[in-house]
Structures are given as structure tokens and as C-alpha cells.
Image (cartoon, rainbow, N blue to C red):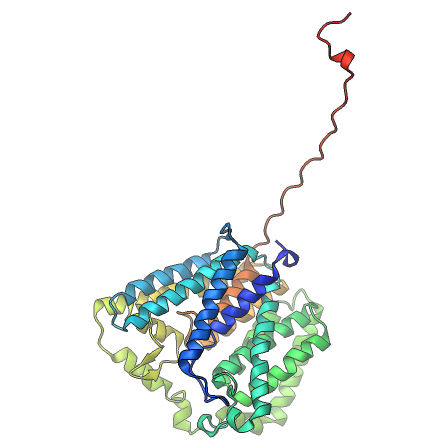
Length: 410
């Protein structure tokens, strides 16, 4: 089914899923927003998204997908790990949220056709989110660049952290660059997305997002080099500009990258390594080792885990880690087996970005932007729906006179 036949309401559903995954924790906003109100809005967005997806797909037509099947298995293992209530009743609520999230993705799979439809929805929705960040920066620079976060950009209208803003900016920048290389957008339209996104990314000082953008784009453009002259030109100019920037602005880039941190703080990944060591050293029962302690807030002893694999291990056990690894590997393998194309390049970028970010960010095991990124990749790797066979033209029946229809000849 082509993008032209995708109902507009599908874009609305995707926007509601994006709203649901924005989260409720972050910096202080200009107008204080109670966390309970934010959670009500995000959860209401998910319930509305599921209802709209069900309304637009009432016959429950879905496409087979190994990615969604494995995501469903992850939901099952999450329910098994949460029924013991070691993480409280909040674990069961998070399972219900994940069930609605996965169910909505299944309903939307009907419109996966290997085209850029969901890429465009993704860019539009996250560009709107970044628009609120830019508006908050203009309205109150002090609230958008607080000392609490070391002067890094945060959401002043909606509570967004610097890593979140950096992630959104990096992802839509990479996707827009690929659409430009594939001639699916013009330079003016691409500049409207790329320029402000890069400015916001620089203000967040987010190293993971920056490395994910650069490495993901290198892999994606590299997959097009042999078949696209535009990709070869872009790759050449990127190498030249990168070399000049590395030589001419080495000191400024180093200062930006270190963010004023000490050598010890940088070597421990801003304290993350200490939390990781404590998590791995904590005693666990066999059940906790296999299934985890249930869905939680991705923290250990009150400190954020900030690693997708360890967060999954803590909450869903080694079984959850195996399932998450399986759907990432499956998407990567399918992308490598596809012939070179723009859809394949976009999928490679998204998969690479999520794999890189998983080292310092949590989210692969629960409803999150990272699962939305991988869902877009899965939609890009889906085979186009088979067109309905053309029916043979009906041969007009020859009119027979009444006298010739008599049973006997006179």
C-alpha cells in the first residue's frame, strides 16, 4: 500500500505515540507543571492513539513482522517479571502501558510498505517537539540553560533533559540529510530542519547523540556510495569539511566534548560506571536473574542506570536481554540483506543510532523513543504490499434473438 493511500489519521496516531514517550521527568519549566498532570497527558495520548488506530483499522489487518513479534515476547516476559510486585504496582501499570504501545504498533503495521511515510511523520513530530524547546529558549534563556545542568539546553516549556533534546535533534537531522541525498526533499526544506536542529544539538552538549549522528550517517551514506552519485559527493564533502574542522577547531571541539569535566569524571562516564558496577555486583535469585525485578523507572538504588542493556537486565533479566538483542540483530541483518536504497539507508541510520545510544541511554526494553526509531526502521525494511491482481475485462454477452433460442428448428 503506497503512502498516498495512508490515512492522515495515521500521522496523528504517530504524533500521540511521540507525545507519550516524552516522559514526565526533566528540568523545571517556566510554568510549573505537576508531574501527575504530565503523566495524565502522556498516558491519555497513548490511550487515544490506540483508540484511533483501532478506529482506522477496525478489521485488525496487520502485517507479519519479526520485530513486532519479538517485541510482543518482550511484553510477555515483562508481565512475568512484574507479577511478583517486587517493583510495586507501578510495574503492572508500566506493563499495561507497554501493551497499549505494542498493540498500537501492530495496528499501524498495516501501512508499512518500505516507503518514507513514517520517516516523514517522525521528522514532523520531533521537529514540533524541538520547536517547543526553541520557543522556551527564546522566552526564558535562563530557564532553558540552567546552571543545574551545567548550562546545557533543557526544555523550558515541557520538561525535557539535554540527552532527550540531543537525541531528537540528531535523529531528525540524520533522516533529513538522507532524504536530501535521496532527492526526496529540496534544499530549502532540508535546511529548515537541519540548521536549527544542529544548533539545538550543539547547545545540549550531548556527546552520545553527536557520535550516533556522525557514525550512523557514515554507515548510511556508505551503503549508498556504490549506487548514488549524490551520496558519493556528500561523502566526499563531509570528509573534507570534517578534516578542516578537526584541524582548525580542534581546541574548541575538545572543550565542547569534555564539557568542563575532570579526567576521572569523564573516564567513569559521568558516574555511570559506578552505578553499573554496583548493579552487576548486587546479589540476585535465579528468578531475578532470568526474568528481572519487573518494569521500573530505569534506576538502581535511586540512581539512573543510563544503559539499555543493564536496565533490561535489571528489570527483565537475561531473557529480556536476549529478546532485545534478537530484534536489534534481526533488524540489522535484514537491512544488510536488502539491496541499496534510500529506505535501507534510513533504516541503517536508525538501527546504528539506537545501538550506539544504548550504551549510555536506557529505553530499548520499554515504551520509548528508541522503540519508535526501531519501528520506523522496521517499516522501511518491510516489503511493499502486493498489489491486487488486475481482473480480466468482462467479455460482453452476445444478444441472441428470441427466434434463435427456440429448442427446435422449423
